[in-house]
Amino acid sequence: MSPDVDLTLPKPGRHALRDRLLALDSQLFEFAAGQHWPGAERVLPRLSRSANHGALWFAAGAVIAASRTPRARRAAVRGLASLSLASLTINTLGKRSVRRPRPVLDSVPRARQLKRQPITTSFPSGHSASAAAFATGVALESPAWGAAVAPVAWSVALSRVYTGVHFPSDVLAGAVLGAGAAYAVRGLVPTRAQLRPPARPRAEVPALTEGEGLVLVANTGSGTADRVRTLLDVLPGAEVVECEPGQVRPELEKAAARARVLGVCGGDGTVNTAAEVALRYGLPLAVLPGGTLNHFAYDLGVEDVRDLTHALVNGQAVRVDLGRFRCGAREGVFVNTCSLGVYPELVRERDRWSPRIGGWPAGVLAALRVLRTDGHPLEAQIGTSTRPLWLLFAGNGTYHRMGLAPGRRVDLADGVLDVRVVHGGRRPAARLLAAAVAGPLTRSPAHAAVQVGRLRLSGVAPGSLLAYDGEVTEVEGEVTLEKLPEALTVYRPLPES
Image (cartoon, rainbow, N blue to C red; front, top):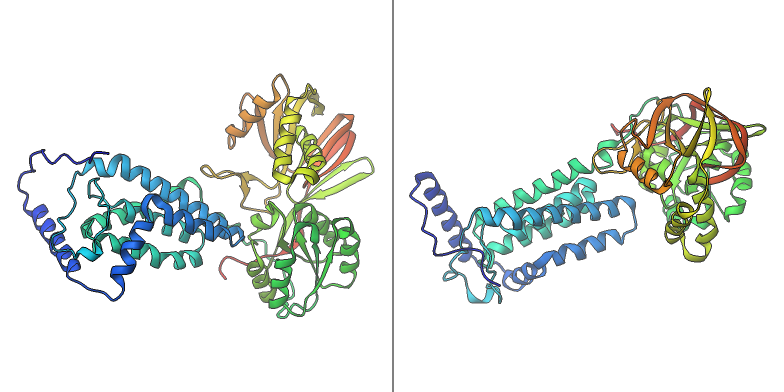
């Protein structure tokens, strides 16, 4: 490897302000070289080496993600994404734009010098940029984890001057660029806090300071034991009923008969059942996310036990919409989505394979099997015309996509169904992919989108599948989708609190 600084280039001409700043920079470097902090000569050089190639931050990201909370996982991913952008910027633009030589090490004690001196240019500091990018990215998603990471990031930046490989201005510029990279990533993929749903319309609900009156049914198939124990530690007066997936509905019915507040812990399918029971009994619902995706809880603003207990203790709740489908004597509600066409087939195929190979592999296998079959599009009459459809998706509320982030809802009481249609034709996989890429567009050659309060389909072929919140049923003939505005009361922490 050869250095990327050409020392044969002529030195730039004199510039009074620049020369004064460079002189001050050198004085600060000499001052740092003369300092002897207890323990620093053993710790800082090792810390500096551990951050080579981002190794320290990848390890930190793994530790943060291992805490198994959604906010921590997002913080780890955001921190590493910010680090990657900062490193790319520094190595492609930063160091090649300002070809500044490294400091002379004469004044730096030998014991603190790095064994392998870097050969790249000095300005700006890549280690400082990576440290600041990772720490800032983590803090933007999780302030608590950001506070834990910040002292380590500060020490890495300080170590670059203490070991003599950078001037102070190199470190400062790198830190500024790293923080800027984290904010650039936030512009592309907004944080959950940026997309927090509005707090209206609020609902009057009891404040359960010790949890008395809350009966929470936990689906043990979702692996919710840790969450339930944490909830009981905070709300010892609550009653928790743990049951197998097949017993969720009967236990919810029993719980609703004696509860002031009906609680549920599980995935979106379990939450769907609880919402239907709470609606029928006229009870407020408390949702503790315990599944894989937890779309409803996360869009509501409840991510963990802390969020839910805060809302319960302070009596904070809102009214949200529900969706409802009807087909003859069969009907059901949905808190997230309802769909016909390819997606219900995918759900059924995934459920068939998931007990054998696991959820995510089963989902991938199901997509490959469904999209490679020679199936025919769904035939449905919309209005006065019959149309072939590969997919009809109806969301309970408008789904938005900001930047590169997946679609999510910012208002669960907007009164509309977000209807997306993928037109029939050849090559369903290509059409579905094109519709996914089009995303926020309301119309493209592959798909169309409209927001309505009610949708009626007729002429649906017998045996057609309809999926609602991960559950699948068969429909035929006439299918009606409609909104139930502000039908359900749900606990959630309010933004101003």
